[in-house]
Amino acid sequence: MAGIFKAYDIRGVYGDAIDEKMAFKIGRAFGQIIGKGTIVIGRDTRLSAPSISKAVAEGITEAGLDVVDTGLCSTPMNYFAVGYYGYDGAVMITASHNPPEYIGAKFCRADAVPMSYETGINEIERIVTSGDFADARKKGTISTRDINEDYQKFIQQFVTEIKPFKVVIDPGHGMGAVAVPLATEGLPLSIVKLYFNLDGNFPDHEPDPLKEENLRDLIEKVKEEDADLGVSFDGDADRIRFIDEKGGIVPTDIVTALLAVDTLRRAGKEEAIVYDLRSSWVVPEEIERAGGVPIKCRVGHSYIKAKMREVGAVFGGELAGHYYYKETFTADSSDLTLLRVLEIMTREKKPLSEILRPFMKYWKTKETNFEVSDKEGKMKELAGIFSDGKVSHLDGVSVEYDDWWFNVRPSNTEPLLRLNLEAKTKERMEECLAKLEKILAG
Image (cartoon, rainbow, N blue to C red; front, side):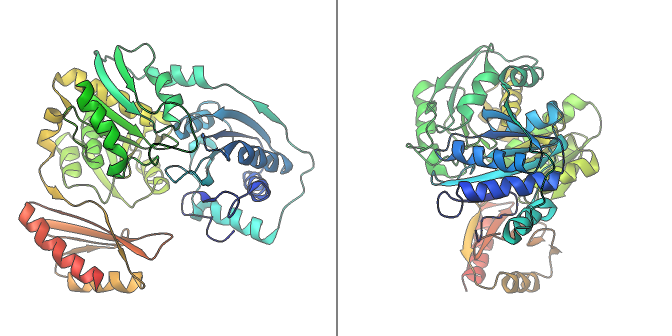
């Protein structure tokens, strides 16, 4: 049991950390927290997902709540179901981008409000650990529902004009293979399918588009097909990554900037946009230039969504490849993100690389991990060394200067510190990176 209750979900190796008996307890605890009503449950294509999903559903009914099982779906489809139909909560059985031996669950309350460790997962852990289960007067029921047609109508209502494009799509044998055809059916797209057969073993590459090695086949196919765009999804299809027509990997924060400007153009008025504090300087600059209000937020989907609701934001973007929309119940939607990028390409009448060129102004490192035994001590040391800069403790420690900035934040589960750094020139980036590496490795 130890270690499966994470910051934003529950996750562990099937048969070791999580089995059907544990899943039943988790479902019963979640149902007890929600209290009454109906919970919608969906699952990804992992081999253990059907039996774990069944056990969680049975646990929820034991707590006296009804369950609506939608079967195979993406996480954004699960968010849609709880928000659109007005259910009292949702569970998505998935381990997201983790290797195939993992399984887990993501939780929402009504209106697709996420449940994080601080807002409910800690209580699930307490109930499961203590066995403090309440007896329900009456056991709930389990029914099934096909949400595909309603989801397709919902997501396609946002399409205005998309011209014919050739798009290579790699769902990595995951749930993008279910969601993308629903989102794109009837559009004038020539879709080249890569790894579309559902397979919970993920035989060709890990379902994690943030790792560049998992994009190699997609990049090759984009070049081979002379395609306009390449798209990669993670296992439960809530993360999305783009490849331009030249085979270049598009930075996720540059997509945030692009979509923020597009969202503000659509709104036609000043609106708040929330962005992950690891994002490039370009993001707040472009939001302000487009007449919006940039709101910096700590990392994590539950924090982004909470901040969006707090300030009434219309859009949010995160470095992990999650993009959030007010229209989709303030939840992430990879499908709407794909449609919006295609609409921008249609409107601009230019290849994606040309559209993005003005956004590529600064030099940014990839997120780099450092093994550190005393994470708090090291972050305090960094704050002291760089005290002449603008220091923030919103998430880990961030320091900003006129020509460069960095953020160092702790891993929730490992003895690691994660570094992101950006500078106005390549030379300054390399110089500052070398200095940070020496301190973090010391």
